[in-house]
Image 1: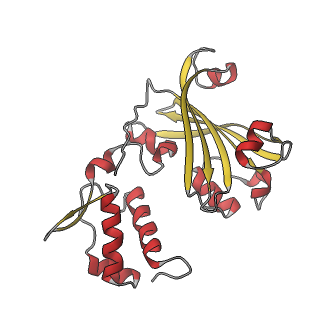
Image 2: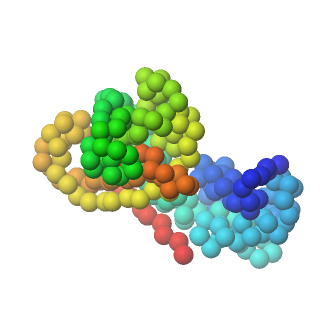
Image 3: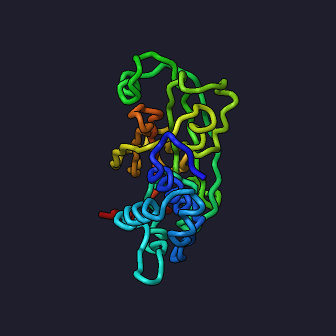
Length: 241
């Protein structure tokens, strides 16, 4: 049974999107019928029908008249959609490797002017900074650096589990939900420290991703800067209209 204050259709959509993202409905499988979903969520069939139609328009579901609604296998098999480009564990798994995370550095420090501008805080305000190394079958492939306004957190940063996905970390320690991201992608020369963590040569060129994560209220939650070894990991992107 769903509860207010969010519109019922929005609540149903969020649940179904999460199930699709987490593989509760496997690629190519038929999902429960409109009647079953309506009964589960305590909403009308019209509400469910509206949500399924929206997800189909976005390419996530395939509706087959007289047969039911199916998970779009092609979209599920892509390795970068619905924000999973930034779910590095899933990205590594989808490339056929076993992921592990190694935290390599964390600190509390003042925000630079650039960081303060991105996070809508004052220069010099406290930040929690964390560097994490993502490994594919023990080979370093991604160096992820995230900075968060220190004021977000409800616990001392020493208690923060750096192995969590950014969404889970923010949910658990800041009671915030990520709603969308804005990303800049470019190639750049590796700084010396990053090169050492990734077992590459300084000044070698690597793909760089800079991402700002926002809440539904347009609040910047974290600024991420990651270096991505595209010799090992391959991206397949899905765009749906």
